[in-house]
Amino acid sequence: MAGETKSKEFSRLLEIAGQKKGKLIISGSLAVISACLSLVPFIFIYLILVKLLDPSFGPQDYGYVWKLAWITVLAVLARLVFGYLSNLLAHLAAFDILYGLRTNLGYFTRKTSGENKKDTFRRCREYRTLYCTPYPRYSGRN
Image (cartoon, rainbow, N blue to C red; front, side):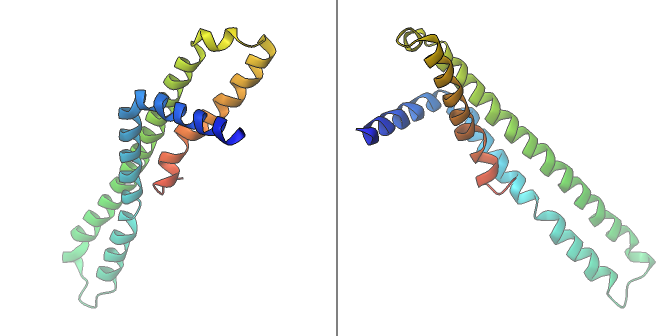
């Protein structure tokens, strides 16, 4: 019996999440881009070190090294921006979903106010964890 209830709740949860599928997909995509951008500084720092350790390094190479350094800084900033936008969209989708759940008055009239309050807090915590956390975290961004 408990397994059936969990299965029904999970299928209902996926149905509700489908209402905000666009935000969740964009959030996941931005999180993946952010994770990919986190590799760029390592690559460009390696390229800078290769150039600096080259025996023929001279003043003619300063511009190239500075260009790589600025690309590295811009990649770090872009990673932060994409990560922020990913988290923002995931949270906006979760809050929209939670708002829709709370306004479902049929749910609230079947239980006492104490049960509703306790259940609402529990479900909100579970839904927020389900919708907000995975996209940035599972894509490699913490």
